[in-house]
Image 1 (tube, helix red, strand yellow):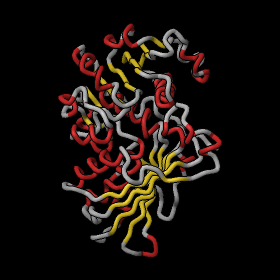
Image 2 (cartoon, helix red, strand yellow):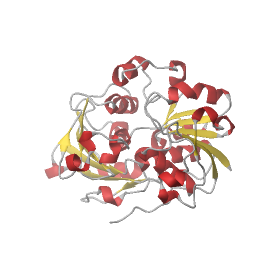
Image 3 (tube, rainbow, N blue to C red):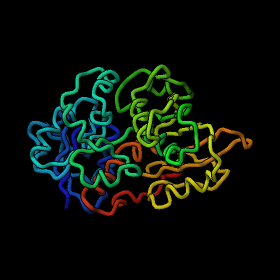
Image 4 (cartoon, one colour):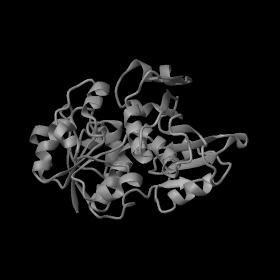
Amino acid sequence: MIKVGVVGGTGYTGVELLRLLAQHSGVELKAITSRGEAGTAVADMFPSLRGRVGLQFTDPAKSSLSDCDVVFFATPNGIAMQQAVSLLAAGVRVIDLAADFRIQDVAEWEKWYGMSHASPALVAEAVYGLPEMNRDKIRNARLVANPGCYPTATQLGFIPLLKAGCVDASTLIADAKSGVSGAGRKAETHILFSEAGDNFKAYGVAGHRHLPEIRQGLSLVAGGPVGLTFVPHLTPMIRGIHATLYARVTKEIDFQALFERAYRDEPFVDVLPPGTHPETRSVRASNVCRIAVHRPQGGDTLVILSVIDNLVKGAAGQAVQNMNIMFGLDECAGLSQLPVLP
């Protein structure tokens, strides 16, 4: 059994991670930390976990994290970079669900996240945890930077095209929409029900923190710089991301066949038949990304539709998928849940 610790188990990503780990036959939850909720039974805060998680939240300073095989950080940005060094020194492997180790250029990270990086030496070691891109590197990683939700949906939609060199990499467009849970479990005016319900709006048009992460990943695939316009939107739903991606064709190939070949052996990427339109509810509570390929009116622009659950494939599910790869388990272990409908 893999001994698992979770730092920051009180947010939406944290409880989703606990839901998945509680159903995983190969792990044992050893510690779930929270400074503010120390001493509170996890199941008292999250009744959905009653009978499956019997632990209490513990103060990070008094926890047994160093006795774990792997520790997940489901914390705000800036926490994992302060605590990862000591855990790695103790032989613990670390999966960070925040952004502390995603961007390889430390100065770029500091510009977008507005703080100094506490562990810049670890950034170069961290493996970007998109299994469809870095599976071999993840296997031997001590430190995995779990991708963001928008970057997961966007990169999975663009990667086959950039690998094939069949689109103009300088004019990519990602028009992405997210449910309100992507903003986290906190009280802020813009995510109140009466503000977000019956409403739809763009945000971060001038620049969003996920932009450099997406651009970095796509540039590695393309073998050079990419031009990307990324516009996120907030939608009046709880879960889900829908990314509508645009790319101009520069070389004629069978694009449907390209995607089917690219993801043929990927357990969590489903390429849909021609002419279909994936829905966010078709992946709700699952670790699946569904993709559809369109070429409107046979023109020179491809439209790729990519949907994920932002809390699962966009966060906790992908983190568990990475853990499975790191420890040589069945990659699908603990992640076989079917989507929830309606």
